[in-house]
Image (cartoon, rainbow, N blue to C red; front, top):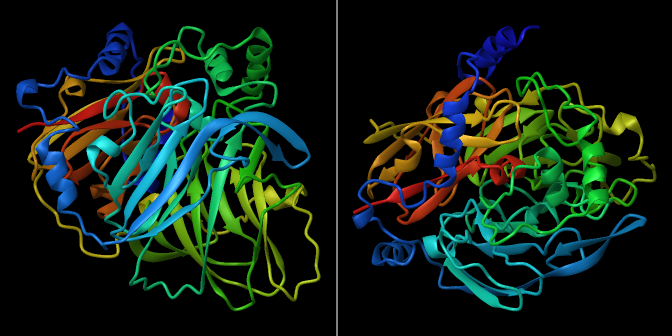
Length: 520
């Protein structure tokens, strides 16, 4: 099938508008630089609201509060972690390949002291939370970089229930072990779930002969990064690490009809669920008949997955922490940074829980087992990661649980997602990129025009948005297909300066980012 025919077919399936396939030329490359330097270039900069202004404090004071404070400590440090039979050197928030789960309730105040024992500057971003701007964890936009040996305390109210996560927002650190789950429980939960388990999926390469920074160098020797909140020179890498990284890029891009063609650039050597490979799987134990809620988080840097539970129907009840109309299926496509809550009614036996890499072989798996089960399951069998072949749930088929308040946008912006020719340089272009400004109370529309041949999981900080073409589906990270157009609407109700970027970590580090500016 030709790329244009595939684009038209996908437009019907995803509700997107296809774009022409005009080449991205030197003018667009110039716009990459504009995107990278757009901070402070907004109009009305004299009246811009900074992360430390009274409006930010006032918005925090107005949030729903439970009166309860939860305190936690995190230490970011070099560590040797076990990945099955392998031990790897990485950076993490403990002795595991995934950080500790943080669980609070809606309206709780979360106080987290971060100690930086890394040899590099760092930060923590609280992904998906309607957070106060100065706690968003994005240096140098919302805070100073946390230098080696220093500490920083994040202190904020979590006003909305849902499944979220936290991760470093400095360089490519999140593609090491610097991430974890953040669950905000609903005191008035209506799902009827008997039990609640977090499933964190991750693509892993750090310490297996290479590092994330070596992969970026192999992808593009010209890209120095810095868009991901990294300060100073990027970490040094040696030639052997770059050579190993190049091998991960030589296996092909794969192909996904659901994603419009190219699936990924990197063929990851390992995929994990809750920090464990298939040879040493995480086990979920539940009695037959249990109504089990699985909070599924894709913490991967680049990889999309098809998630399924063998022998069980999935009922999707939440997307990116937002309640949705219940949707049944057999597997669901989940992009990096996205989260889905699914309900399953546990059947007696031992069942693979699979996260198959979309468009390529491989994936991660764990085990769902009832206490009466005597059967053994070989999760290393290729059949486990062959896909269910059943009903695939895609985000355009999801709908919000309540009515979406339609409103004419007060401001509408157009942003082009671009790649600089054949080079691994990504960006956001167009005359609006450097002036994405808004005032409190306005309805904002951003129309994203994907002029590249790859899909992008686009994320807004500090806000959830509605997708008009998906019936007003609310979320904070949405897939924009190749050569397609997608609009998002959100209310300017959280003042400050916020990032808006692709959540493919390597696209982001290579330049696909811009800032949203509040003005008075």
